[in-house]
Amino acid sequence: MTRHSRPGPFAEKSKNPLPDDNEVEEPVMRAIPRKRTRTRTMRKTAVTASAAAAGLALTVALAACGSGGTSSSASTSGGNATGAANPSAAATGAAAIAAALQKPTTLTLWAWAPQTKDIVAAFEAKYPKVTINLVNAGTSTDEYTKLENAIKAGSGAPDLAQIEYYALPQFALQGALADLSSDGLTSTQSQFSTAVWDSVDIGGKLVGLPQDTGPMALFYNKTVFAKYHLAVPTTWAQYAADAKKLHAANPKEYLANDVGDPGFVTSMIWAAGGHPYTVTGTKNVSINLQDPGAVKFADLWSPLITGGQLAPIASWSTQWYTGLANGTIASLVTGAWMPVDLETGVPSGKGDWRVAPMPEWTSGTAATAENGGSADSVLASSKNQLAAAGFLQFMNAGPGAQISANSGDFPSSNTIINSASFLSQAPAYFGGQQINKVLAQSASSVVPGWTYLPFQVYANSIFPNSVGQAYTGKSTLDAGLEQWQQQSATYGTQEGFSVASGK
Image 1 (cartoon, one colour):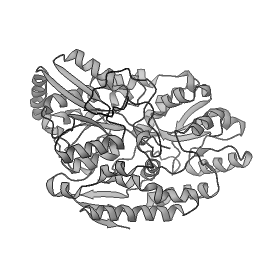
Image 2: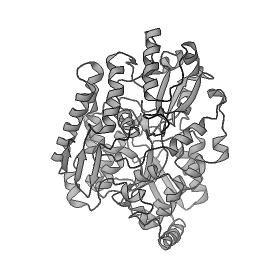
Image 3: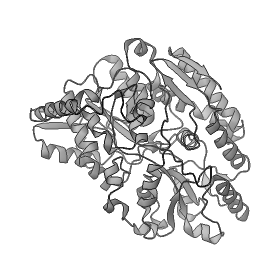
Image 4: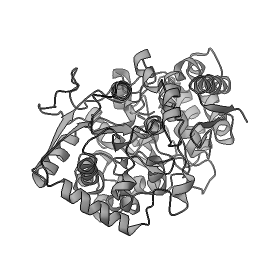
């Protein structure tokens, strides 16, 4: 299940983000509900034609831009093309940013996460000469469509925007996002894990700073597990055995739910060591959804689908919340942002739920993946890039990071993740378990080197009509993955990419 994106989405509704303004020029002024919005849960499986259009019109952008697709190899080598190891550049950038923040400036920020209002208030208190015009232009693909349209029109784009990791390559490829290395923000790299930094280091350019992350874990109902004498699975083989045992004991109860979610599928392939997408240079793309990681996932999940051992219930639906509350859905494999969603969405489950590491493909070898999360970027069209970079640093590598963590987001900052105050939290909802110790371990076990397509927004929009057909008995998971590959490759070719498809 994913928000991841809602955030996966993917047929998921947004969960109380900032109020959605029809007119994006209007700043958000009213109170923001505190119920959580997950950046991951916002990526919707069933994306409308207009939302899918956010991934369109890249052909012209290819000719116009000099940035490449995602390439994690630079950042994983310990120093990258963004120049993280250049202290003089960092010092120069810091001085320029400090000066910019002392000048009367108004910045427009598009973001949906509710805690952003508190971060803006803290920033404006520290830098009273800078005003942040906070706008909710919609969540996830809704925002991306408006952002794409503004970029194409050459007007109306904000100074800054919240963008999920899976969608970043689309905008970076167009040259629509400022390279923050020129402002010295590569000095923040040490605060983040390699896997998280990979997500914002695209084509050798730093195109955003990480806001939150979603390292995956197993959330399970301890009461249900005890009732049916289920051992908490440590491997995927054990997980599959639990799914069969539970459903056989009570056909109305399931270990998990799934009706098809592109964010979940790609995250599972990622954790299995898959690399189905690669991007080289500005236009060379490879898609292979039959790689070893994809095969591992299909071999595990296909029998659960065909055996009817997954609840045919969409995540974030009323039926889903009911299933989590009454125990008919006994576990979730999802991002570390889930605790606050359980607490607010399933209050009757207090004391029943626990957190365990994500099951392993190979016993004794921890390997996890991200499932959701967002970065924040400065638009290349902004006329106030230094001040915008200063806000970004405050938000994601300064005091704003702690404000976000306090709101329930799983932090991207290693400093916060590894702090004693964070690790020692023992929420009563989870029976006093120190769940952050489990989630922090997951964060440290994320497999590095993952890459999204530069048209992943579009690829996710066609998931229901390809892989999604396996969940309705109209196809197999293997055939659905192959069809998803072919349809994605066709689209990429039409948009001017050189696409290699297959093994």
